[in-house]
Length: 184
Image 1 (cartoon, rainbow, N blue to C red):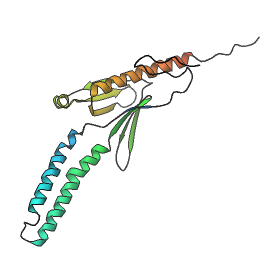
Image 2: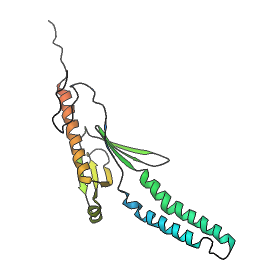
Image 3: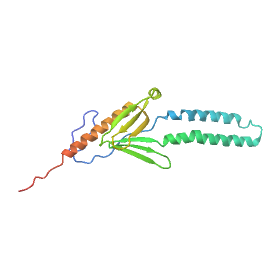
Image 4: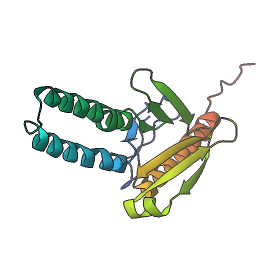
């Protein structure tokens, strides 16, 4: 059985009873505004080390300057970047997945088919930056909080659409179970 061509902007639904493949709709990281201060510190650190290198009175102080700058660079620039890089949200056609951690990965999932409420919250700084926080709660599992998501209204709309499509397909598939007439 073939499905008719989808209308403009509407996804093609799989045939009744056929397994729908899980496709990635979006992958989102929190907005990178948390990296503003580490980036400014990196620029200032490079300028200060360049200025004071070779201008200090004793030769071992250059070594101390470079080692101190390395420690500051590691703790206040590299670690915040790795923390930001290790956090991602993936929206698929079946679920929302939050992955965190660099060495030890932690993964939290929330299925679209069970349905959930979407709470959108935007503070004053988030409004200026165009971001927001989405809280997904289905009443049974712990709620999933997507923090500082860029284009939060678009992500909210995508999540609502995915829940609706998943529930429509589940309802359609539950009612399209073929029955074999019994022979008498």
